[in-house]
Amino acid sequence: MKLFNTKRASPNKLSADQIAVDIDGLSVRLNQKKVLKKISMRIPAFSITSVIGQSGCGKTTLLNAMNRMNEIVPEHQTTGQIWMDGRDINHRRENVSRLRTNVGMVFQRPNPFPMSIYENVCFGLKLQNKNNRRQLDDAVERALINAALWDEVKDRLHEPAGILSGGQQQRLMIARALALKPQILLLDEPTSALDPLATLFIEELMQSLKKHTTIVMVTHNMQQAARISDYTAFIHKGELVEFTNSDKLFTNPKRKQTEDYITGRYG
Ligand SMILES: Nc1ncnc2c1ncn2[C@@H]1O[C@H](COP(=O)(O)OP(=O)(O)OP(=O)(O)O)[C@@H](O)[C@H]1O
Ligand SMILES: [Mg+2]
Image (cartoon, rainbow, N blue to C red; front, top):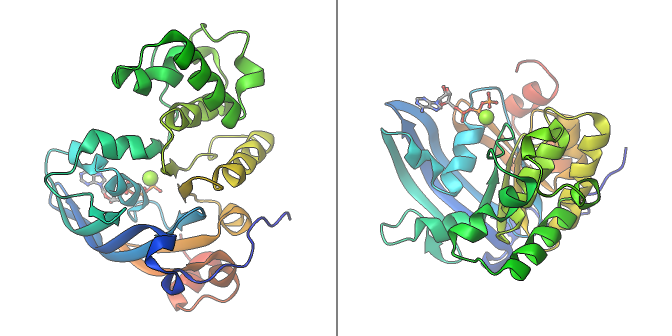
């Protein structure tokens, strides 16, 4: 097994400037249901953090909290703070569209817009009124190269995105997020529908991205979390049970609940 993660300090020992997202007592209610309960975790910058746990434990909701996507749910309530760059992202004066530019998201299922490959990648830039053709061409090329998709699509940029395979669509979604140069990239099960080769592509892509991006990834695949992420958070029924270096969590978990989960006793 190829192990990417090198030795790193535990999240609690890092200084404030090494932390990309500081989640402090986060609780989220969606339609009266308490989905997340007092989650506190400091996500280290320029690293990959995996979020694991049973289906329905709140992983997607945790990602959504980091770019205020839970607000789409008509009845939602968030308490606690999420600090990024010294600002509480839930503050009423925060600019949500700027937040979502800084915090890119790739959803659980690829959701390309019904338009061309090219238009999908530059969609967010056009929303920001960036319309200079040459600059858009450059941005699209750079994002597709960074998402390891350029070679496969460079001759058919103006064909509909829907013609791409599932794995290519997933990389297209990553390119769409990367075009906005996010500081933080949230990936919700980015490889769950992919074959081993496409999975390897995405895993290697994440390794190269973390040089300048902080990645938070949800995965059901514990080998994957152990293999590629620096840190892993285990959530159970909306509570954070354990969050530490991946090698520690998978070889020597502190909590019995974590051990039961990673050894397949439930979940
Ligand atoms: N809009 C909503 N209204 C009410 N409850 C919701 C809403 N969205 C999610 N939930 C509930 O919140 C809990 C957590 O959902 P979430 O999608 O975060 O889970 P998850 O860990 O990502 O699961 P999976 O692994 O299946 O994707 C679930 O019990 C779900 O039913
Ligand atoms: Mg989910």
